[in-house]
Image (cartoon, rainbow, N blue to C red; front, side, top):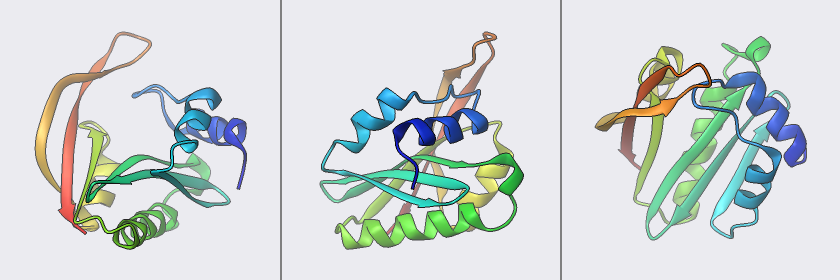
Length: 137
């Protein structure tokens, strides 16, 4: 598994909206006892489990490796880890315009439970809503 700088490089290759996370931000999250990292050679997922709830913080799969099942495997591993950590419910946020991610999460049983208007803003000033998805673990 890459270090925080390597994870930040993968994240930067995957995101412009929301903005990619820095190595400092990733390292700080990973220092939390509630945050966990799951990964494959071309992608990773960070989650957090606390007080009976699990949150999928980010999922990044390199563009050249997409549509090979990596994201689906990482989401299933996230749900398994959430169960291990005694979470009853899982949550995530996704940009409303990210149709590929929405399809992945819906296929894993997540459903929309909320919307945050204009939550994400890109460097070009473009904004997008965040959809809040959830499912029982």
